[in-house]
Image 1 (tube, rainbow, N blue to C red):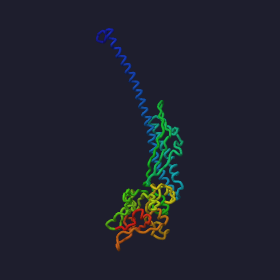
Image 2: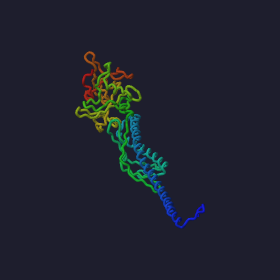
Image 3: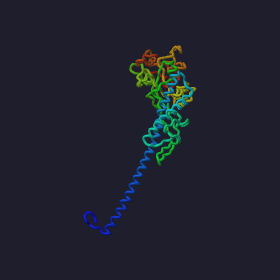
Image 4: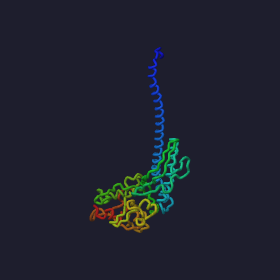
Length: 362
């Protein structure tokens, strides 16, 4: 009988049994689904923790690479001594800084996720060990204005939490490191600490099917005293420090068809190499100009090529003339006000040919 006084027949009572059974079964299913959901969510956290480790390694490699490049230049400048193996110095610096960065990032991940993290089979909890070993990290260069930090693939990663374990191996990773905005110690030391230069890329370089990649030979201004874009390259227009003149750096590869040996890579500059003693790849070399003739007393003449490595080795140069006949004048370097009234600009026959500056300019 129910609360209203109605009696249930035996048949009516039996109709309720399936409902009760279904309700009990449904409750069990819900509990199991909740358990599976928790397991799936936990697995997601574990997996996401692993992917965050990879991100930390890549970010750490980039930051450590920039720090290593900067420290190498400061080492040369502060000690007034060039390196013998700048690549190894920077690589070791990257290894140490990347190790510290990744350990700190992973220890934070452990706190946030409740997981235990192992890299190279070493627990990063309160570790003082190097989780990255020599050979795990290397550097390569593919263009003059930066280099890659490479992390080898196959480094074991493990993330644990109770019955959940993620085990895997790192993919091969590479992070690009720009060297723009870093001081060039090669020029600072070779100019007897008189000229400070910072590496910034010449912005008007193009791959021109006519071969005029640098566009240095284009027309002068209305005053007839400036030749674009070599003037802009010399003056360094647009450098963030707004110090003038501070010349740009331009791509300067080997060109065997013109018997041209190219410039110097970033690593060459840390080691005081020459284009002929350099072992750097052709496409990683760059050059810039020296303005102000800081070594005039050493050379005994101003007629020295202002191309950086030629200037320091005393290679002779000739002016670039603008105008015609009696109106012809030699092109001059920028002065401290950024106007074309500095010293006469000299360039060697080699670089005049290479930079398409052999013809008369009007």
